[in-house]
Length: 222
Length: 173
Image (tube, rainbow over all chains, first blue to last red):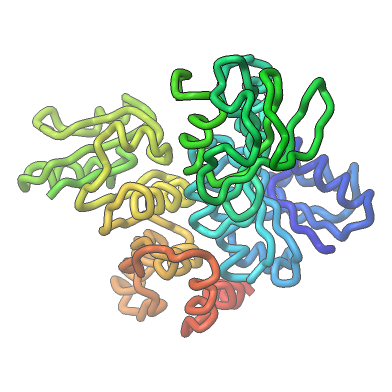
């Protein structure tokens, strides 16, 4: 696979290194000449000291035959432009953008960026997982706007004591598994839910309020 | 008309002042309070300090549903992103972003936002003053309108009369 990495900061540097070590063809674009030379000294002549936002520079770096372009500079606006240029001018199949402001995710998605990686969102996610609030936890975003969600049931949950098949789940929503006493298990229709169960469900983001109501109850702050 | 301007540099401040004196409602956004010193004391519009590529900031500044949005900071990509936010997220139909790289100015007009390119504009003006013909590329372009997802726009771009990348490469080469 030929991957074009744009942005020679820490993320771009290690990404290039790892990809190259695992046998992929990689070119790194870094517009700062000094930084580009420094990286080239360390990992070899796969560095193009040009601005990846420029169409002509992308062409020179081989964007037209790239299988993927990863825009990992520290600036959201640059990463957006890199991905859009890659997508629309070079028909790159997969564009990946690093996003610092999590609120930019919907815009980037709407504008055609294929994969969005938000370190801010990830750190936020791991903090939220450590807080025992009675909320739905986002475990992962799956493709097609689908989410993997976890809910911890307590005594007040309307789902406790009921069969899984009797739960009023919103359309397009499904319970995938439960984690009981730290052991994950598949859910059958006759599985009776208990307080302390962690319920793993999938669904679209708009199902969340209904899912919250079914699994956690309306009393919790949504 | 309600206008939002991002970037209170020389052009931004001039536009803000002119639109204000001609009776329009103007909000101007800049990262630095100092930039607002460029506005005259008589300016009646709103000056908001903040990042014009941040959706929250723009909403707080009341940008949603404005009639005109001008992104005039010094950064092409900042202007492009602010312009696309305005068009796609804030419901502003008439958007212009200053994009000094002619290749990007061409590309983004096709991707939706209007662009104005100082490079082409000044080169043509200077060549005109010298009695020579310019490059023939327009320096201001109307945007093609809303983006409809990556797949649909790939087609019209590929069918564009001139490939901007090839044009740029030929110029540089």
